[in-house]
Length: 533
Image (cartoon, rainbow, N blue to C red):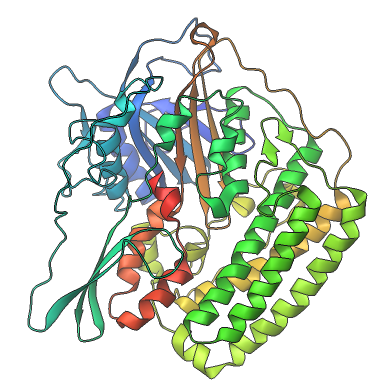
């Protein structure tokens, strides 16, 4: 497989979704970015660090894992699937650098800053060299992912610096600083508003407060155990991340899971989607001063979570997905209660959707608020449900369906106005579609085993997982050592769609009033923890 116009042959990874891998040179690196952009593709993830310096992936015979070297990686999405590019870097003449991708894909900017903090690998010519994840927890010259992951010594803290926010000058312009500690029970993030009166001229975000060293911790875990850490990357996406990691591990080991396990994974994922949408719809109504919505949707979400506890042993279905399949089954006695609850939730959500539609006060707050035009969404790489609300018709379950989505025929929810109202509409549509699929899966689960053995190979291997979580695409890139190095995780990068969408929020609030920021922010509902890792 090739990217049309690029003279590089990609090798297919073993995965239920189309993913290809290749090592490239710097000229190919930039050429690929331009070609992907021209063909309407998008940047999926960018990361850096040490890599398996081998000329072949697991599908090609390789006697042993070679020495590890600095490299930068990127994955792109085209209609054909994911193209994973690895660019080896030469540090002989100084700190390794690579061509800046943010000039082609603006979403790359923060990913490049995070890579510089963690790996000491910088984008040459980058216009924004400020630290992203390092808030002074380690020295400016200390790069966690370049250290021995098996070492237990903690880095010496660095000096706290005055972060250079971009200032807006002019008559009547003043700043409002919000966070990182907030009044509500939410994760930390700092928002610096430049305003005139109540009108927002500019928003700049400062995140990274929940950085917890997950990628380094991954390299300290056994491959068959690390799914538990993946499930805790972002607590609202425990199913999605566990599936993406397990898919990457199964890709690296060329494991095909049993059909019943695949169906149960999808059942868990769609249940997670419904739970989050119910919570968001209630919070969105509440942020527009419609407290009834919060009360009703919170009640429905609580019923939904209690049903998950009864059926699968955990309200958030944590650790239900394991390498090779699942650790839970849907017992016959749980089928009828789950179907009844689906009917109840759908009937009540449809009534609430009608109330939202007819409520003049809500519509006044929702319509035209926080608008991201389709053109801007495409330029900035807006993805997931927020992207679909701005005409970005990407949904992995539809574009590259795998078992059981090949049978479920997902109807993609797409809106074009790109405002809060559109993002609310997408949530409603996805709730109804997920309920339809849950009913089908519950009544058509294939019989068979829940798991199969995952056997780690003798040779070094690469694997990738790609799953449509409730917020958007989750991507996991995994590098494993061979038996000679004890079947270690050499590198595991977990990518959340919030990386792409947080910068778009800065644009969405421009021209709106400060009081509408909580509403716009909740309509995106991005993950702090999922991005900060």
